[in-house]
Image 1 (tube, rainbow, N blue to C red):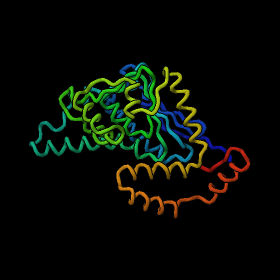
Image 2: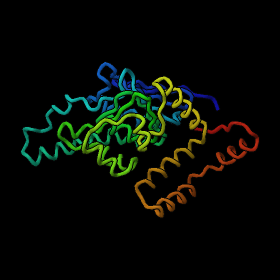
Image 3: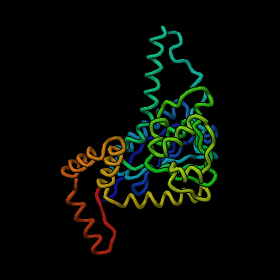
Image 4: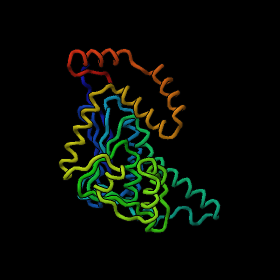
Amino acid sequence: MEHQVVTQPSFETLDLAVENHVAEVFLNRGDKANSMNAAMWRELQACFEWLDGEPDVRVVILAGHGKHFCAGIDLAMLAGTHGEDLEPSRRAEALRRHILSLQDNLSAIEQCRKPVIAAIHNTCIGGGIDMVTCADMRFASEDAWFSVREVDIGMAADVGTLQRLPKLVPYGIACELAYTGRNVGAQEAQQMGLVNRVFSDRETLLKEVRAMAANIAAKSPLAVRGSKEMLLFSRDHSVREGLNYVATWNAGMLSAQDLREGMAAQMEKRSATYDD
């Protein structure tokens, strides 16, 4: 099938590139330690919704330009007003709607049908943890460190960390990190299950993550997307419900074309070729 040129959106706070079915999304506020300002929150949702719908994209890498992966929410956002001049109940409703909007901004990463691989170097704190826990996999460089920092500024994390982190690490560990805000190095993060693997430096990290993304991009996109759908569903439902869902999914979504191509490629010892 003839390869078509993808017309992609451009962003103020993100650097997006698509090549060979792999999209790379780099946080692009390196001069601000990739702190998450209002524009970045909005653009993350817009970007991942576009990636979800773009047929040419099969895998997404999420990384950061500059010295730090992500220093969390831009504190100027926290200092902003959210209906302080309103009657208390209406102010509370306005703040709740604002928090829900921020949650949606990051949930778009998780809801993207394509696998998302986070490549984390150096600093990943606060909102950065909220962000990477939305990814399917997390890999880190040796200098990476993590902190659920919200407790140190007098608030409970409210855009995903407290909901997703206990699905990734033991409950007691999640409690420890949320209550203390302490720093966790890359090796400890791997031991607790927060990251899959640790590499010596950022260059090696990106090289290895790109190799993994290329490997996934060579698989049947429909099979990979179905696998992500099942894994997320089964995370939040019982085994019985998950089994029922995958039976129903494959009854309607299993591609005879992809199955034939995959089996033929195995028998002929060649690489399979799949439609987007």
